[in-house]
Image 1 (cartoon, rainbow, N blue to C red):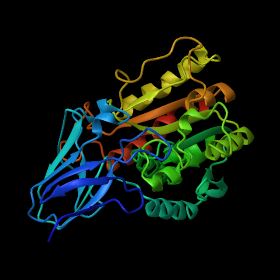
Image 2 (image 1 turned 180 degrees about the horizontal axis):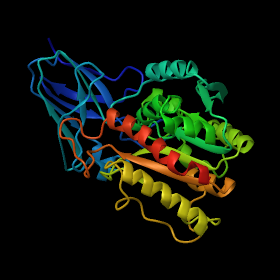
Image 3 (image 1 turned 180 degrees about the vertical axis):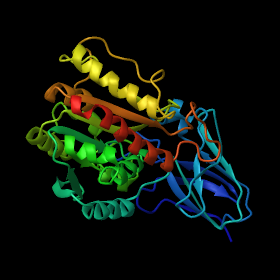
Image 4 (image 1 turned 60 degrees about the horizontal axis):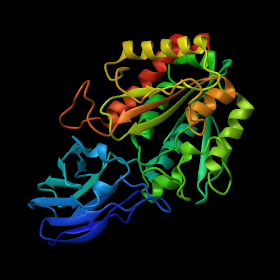
Length: 371
């Protein structure tokens, strides 16, 4: 059977340039109306017993070329369990090599979380005890933007994920958080009594379905729209900001993945005009509690911290912290392995993302009353 390669499915992204036998030259398709690209997800049929060499020839022009160093692509025989493939990067080309007895293989930048799984997740969350649901509005492609609410405490906590659709670990994180929060664990009960949670499982369902790395259907980076979103460019942010304005925000986690840094870390709201020592202490207390609960979180490696007044207020964490005087942060998980606790078979994975979702809430339970 001859090899065929396709990305003609939800979230798929690859272009076939040329190839024969097991050697193929491919290219990652840029986001619509955008220069961003790095996410890939495609299927190979006829692979059984073939030494595959798949060259992503335009990797050198991708959004974050530092993301390819020491990176390993993910491969699956069932589109469910994802392992690391032999991967190298040289002279602007990312090369994946693999041999299997399976006829069909899927390759991806990280374990996908496609629209079918998202819709099933939404349907499941709707049935959870105490969970309220409403649709904030429709995206540019006509998809629902769902908001879930749980708890009846005074602290207003917002959790939202996947502004950048290719960062699929963010919605895997949400699976872990949602599995924990409505449950019988004493910490979960304490959280529901002390706080009201507002949860957006996927901020960018259009980009997710289109196979984008970073943008929505209009080619707009949602995490640069918080200073002045419009219905024409970024209705997702218009809807969420309007809901935040009505609820208020005391604490917020915006969940992401980082291409280049092989660690789990937070980016806080330092550099915002309203930064204060009291809020800084509470933010640091949360980080300390999280680090004490898991070896998968650290504070040594991360982004450069902006100086006083130098924060970009178009970015969600800074905008929310400033507008609502909130404790706000961006959680980043790696596409690569996690250097603090490496896992040679699966690297950073959906399971570890789920576990971190639970652990982030356990750490929040330690400080929620201070909000």
